[in-house]
Length: 124
Image (cartoon, helix red, strand yellow):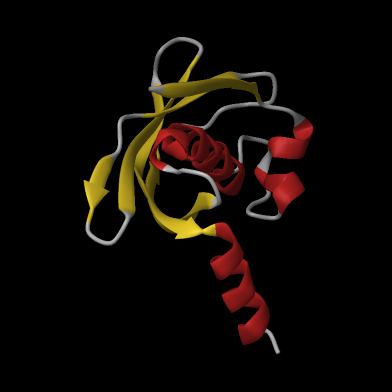
């Protein structure tokens, strides 16, 4: 399991990221932290020249966390799917052990150069 501890700052709030008007941990920031945990957890599944990209996020944000609050975000062992797909169970808990969020994030294993070439070609 890959885990990271974060302290909520003013820059992490719904007000700061534009996802609401209250000074609590923003759902988009929480999801970004969860995705970062899955990137690290996916590393053993990628080889030279390969990486993963996020493809789907299913998160339930259950509890507000104020500025100064601590949140530990974790990504569990991946379940492999067809076509180089990985599904990670993710969760976040606050300093008192209460569940802040839970869900799953899917990532696809891709060849880095080929992926970037397709993105650039589609942008033209």
